[in-house]
Length: 186
Image (cartoon, rainbow, N blue to C red):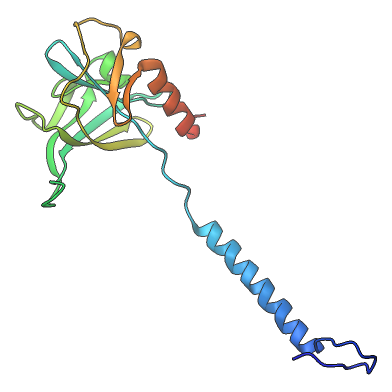
């Protein structure tokens, strides 16, 4: 409601209406700021790399510098069309070699304490969780490619490339992606 309250021909809103409009604007702004503070930032995009060394499938799991892998869990993903449950395929703790501790995991090997023995053959659709000694957890769910790049035993990990959900990448590119996504390592 706009009225001529001074009698000078100009119309103004009454003070009560202006106060209500200001209060409503301040409350709306406060609500927007409160909701924005409650939202969590998106989870970083974590990429695992897969390759073959000899006849074994390996996973390269980038981790923070100075940290070490403590345990792994591999689950079979539910069927895309039918649904279902995640099925534990392999769970193991306490790595037995330096490659495993640094994140190069041979499926079904490299750990001293096995809670769930590995299957003879891993499914192509996997959920992988990596737990480190400092308590960080990294996970990824993906479908293994039918054809993976293969290397002879003894190939240094730094000279390898890996299949990821975004295509084939070098060791350095996989590490760089990890560092750009996981700023909390610093």
